[in-house]
Amino acid sequence: MDQITLYTWIGFSVFLVLMLVVGYLSSKKMKSIRDFATGGGTLGPYVLGFSFAATYLSAATFLGYPGWSYEWGLSNLWLFLAIIAGGPIGVLMVAKKVRKLNNGQKSLSLPDWLGDFYKSDILRVGTGLILLFNIFYIAAQFVAGAKIFEYLLGMSYTSGLLLIALIVVIYVYAGGALADIYTDAVQAFIMAIAGIGIFISGIVIFWKGGISDTFAGISHELAAQNENLVAVFNPESLHFYSIGAVIGAIVIQWAFASAPHLFNKVLGLKNEQDLGKMIATYVVVAALSVLVLFGGLYSRAALGDTASAADLALMDYIIWAFPAIVVALFGVVILAAAMSTTDGIFVSISTVFANDIFLKFLVKRNIVKVSDEKAEKIAFQISRLTVPFIGLLALLIVIRPPEYMGDVMWIGISGIAAGTMGPILQAVYAKRKAPARAAELSMFVGLGSYLFLYFTGIIPSTMSAGAVSVFIGIATINIASWILRSASSSEMGAAEEGGS
Amino acid sequence: INEMLSIWLYGFIIALIIIGFSLWKWYF
Image (tube, rainbow over all chains, first blue to last red; front, side, top):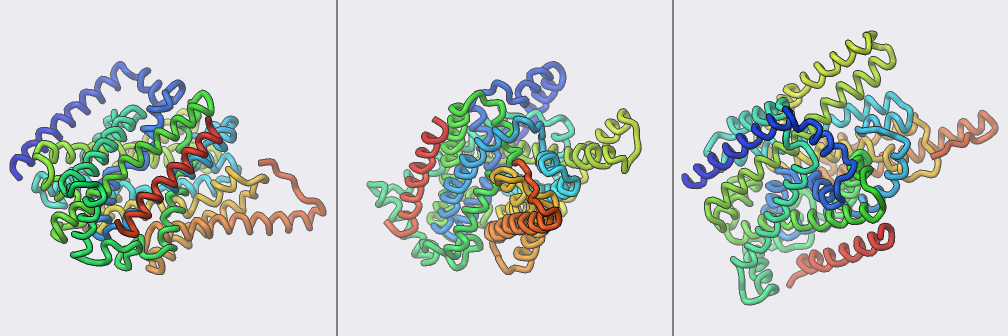
């Protein structure tokens, strides 16, 4: 273990120094290049495809998803199918539509996009507040970082958590040199390599003379421990215990991939063919990266139920199967991913407060009366102050280590999807624009039903509870639109015509 | 081998075919 600790310290120190140098250089003279890099514009479709895939591949997915495999066996392969089927279908359906819709609308964030589309401040501020659910996503990445520090460097969980939170907050303040499309692309590339490497390593280690004999051997090892580990639906699983739960997972993956503001990256592409190349790249990269969840199966088959926590089962397997230098490298990759993923979310949450809520609502509606120049200054202060505040909140959420970091992450994603998918899908697909009141109602009902279903334990899976609530939200906006239209047409004597 | 691994393998292949076909039809 000492060798691993040493390599990890060296690797992580080199990485941090490199980050500081890159951050310093980019803030000094590369300003124009960074603006160029984040502006989309003329970026190639392949780079964009990689960076789009990185949106789905975080530190918590890389440790958390194999943790689910380890705990619940082959049934977790449904997650692979949900990610590969649900995500790309959402992207394929939405990408073309959003390209057409977005041409007239220069909105950068989701609150902006929905607020502008429905011309509703309630929706703008409400969506902004719903995005605070992303704090759960940050918290899950903190857990991933803390677990790596705990496991590879021998710290306590609490000091590991404090250290990763501190590093991330300082890093965000330093300007986040990692937070652009190229570094996202590199992250996705490394994760795809790691995913393939782990998938193949198991086949080599368990080799029985043929592919199908090898997997039969692995299945046999699992079944010997617990028959449910090879079942199609594992009754013990939080996520894949029935066909309904599987459909829920597919739906929520589809919803997650349909968020329109993710498609800002898409707008820079020149033509449909480039868009197609980007999506194809994203599908391949995502599929290869998600192969990492086989690592959890191998860990369970080779080492049995011995991991100190499900989320560390993948690391147990890597230590067992690979030389120390690879273990350290993997740890550093997880830490780097935790930093780059959370950095983007910190920036987007602080933008919500400074831009969407303060500038575009409080100042614009004259609720706060200040001069334009002063408003800009205050907005900057707000975005600065929210960073440590968000970091502290995320830290407090996971101050006691959660059983599964994957679930913490999905509390956030499902909450956002439940509150926003109704208005989003209506905006993207409906022939007639829904009334703002209907969109606002959908936001409250969708989010409310998610909180109720998940936190009362009626639906134990975060993903399924999210999926059911997404459906409730979609139904709400459709029914409310219909009622509001009927009411106004009977009053006015003529139906109002709204373009979409 | 067994039911779940079959679902995974064939599901993966079918998903790739559907995605490939839609990409071709809508984008290429």
